[in-house]
Length: 91
Image (cartoon, rainbow, N blue to C red; front, side):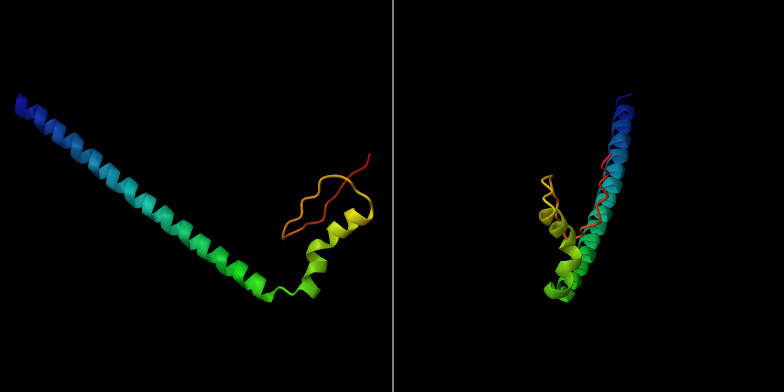
């Protein structure tokens, strides 16, 4: 009887270890994918900033800032690297 209990404990332990190994591999894959995505984003940003020309691109990316400031708009303005047109409805 005692040998049977030890055998069951061993089987449970081995099962747990296999599950932990699978979880560890999945975590490694997720980390690898995250690093790959991070690397792609870094390359994309590097290319963007290398090609960025203040004279040419500031007008495109910050045109809405000028519209709101000059029109006296006193709301909250979120300025980001990718300013998209805002559609504000009045009424």
